[in-house]
Length: 210
Image (cartoon, rainbow, N blue to C red; front, top):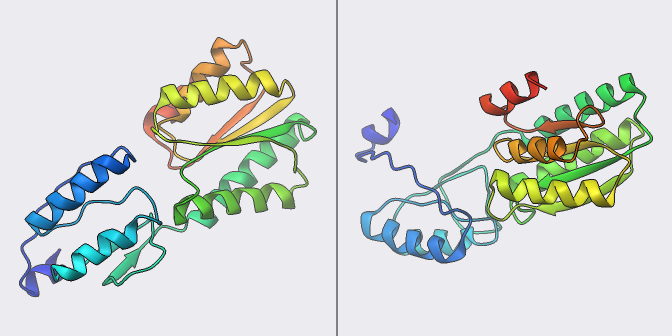
């Protein structure tokens, strides 16, 4: 912020979500170009078109977390999604071993795998589970609406198709509330463990309450 002001830029905070919808993203790109700021693309594959528009308008761009497959930008800021997810996998594997549940399968409900951070989270988690000798997967579902209701449905389907599922990894944790609801609705409380990325306070509270 301070450095941007020194360089002569006026900073306006504008937080909005495109809900991962391509139509809304296009509207956001047009709005951003008119106002000379940047909205977030839905995934790494759509980011280059945003960067092209910014370049034409001579708008400097900082890319954060989602990443881009190509294009010019000033800086790229990203959390260590691989190591974060690897740590989640290690913690889940240790908990499964403590319970003697290493023979069961693991379900993954992920953010878009077209996004760099999504790819890193999946790779980090899988590497940790492989190192622990837990390799059975109950499937992978990619979020589209990123809601608890969507994850509720994904979890229900996984529970039905995989009665021996012993663990789940939800790659962003607000939707994890949907997984916890589905487990409770299916009377599977206490039969599997749920691990989430980001540690949202609502998820932590629900987990602590059982």
